Length: 244
Image (cartoon, rainbow, N blue to C red; front, side, top):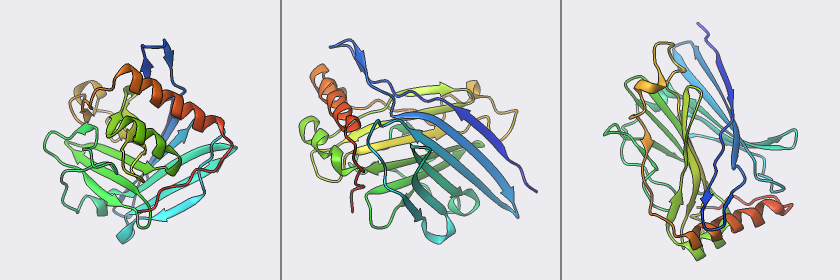
């Protein structure tokens, strides 16, 4: 049996900077989701298109352990993308627990006791996240980027994760920082309510994987974060994914 559902939508990660009356450029501009049930395995592929200006992601195809799937970074038509391929049938056999970002902070979503399965990517400071409760699936990733270390040194341990409803998908995504090296980067979490069954409506699942409030940033810290991201996106450079 083969079932494919497709979604293309726009996720705008606007960081509100009331101190200067500006919004940041989007970090993620689209998400495409395909699901396949084939031979008893339930597979999902979540493709996030990043809008990071002139900065470029490296080409990486990183397998997850035990046939769990892969984390892929690539460029298509000059656009940066991060794709999470996940074998839900195998991954959901792993016990869920408390999940953290590379900076040590809890992931910015509330699992209401269900927990999150964290899959570390060997050799680099990156993670894939999977959770499922009451038929609702969460897919996410976090990647530490070397060029963003300077943000953490000026802001400290923090996170800024706007939440958006896009069609039937709820997303929590943004930037995490740390004053430690190799622990500052970007992360995105997609709540796939409504994609698995037409009977599942987003409005009835808003409490599942809802965003968790982060440490409040001052106006000065927000301004530094915005300016730092803007500087990075103006540079024509290949971003370096931080090593473990």
